[in-house]
Image: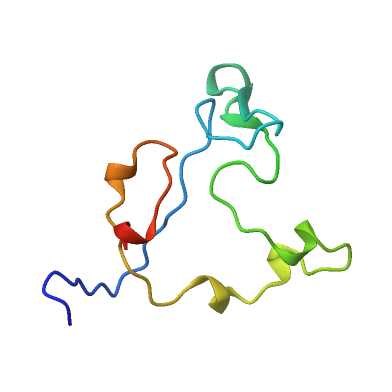
Length: 103
């Protein structure tokens, strides 16, 4: 074990919130959240959500590149969990390049 190694046995959700400030690939549709129903008017809250399937944290399922590829809901959940390492790449800056020296 390395001197500063950390062992975690918890599930860590790496997804990011979606909204107007969600980072997008150039040309992808904007993320838009609009109130559809409100408690005051309708008795419940409901947001209308408009976004591209690649917005925010996502997984490129084989279907993204292959017409007959599996969709993300057809992939086994085990593919999305496993050992990981934490890399401190804060010095790379926003949208900066993460190089081998960070690892």
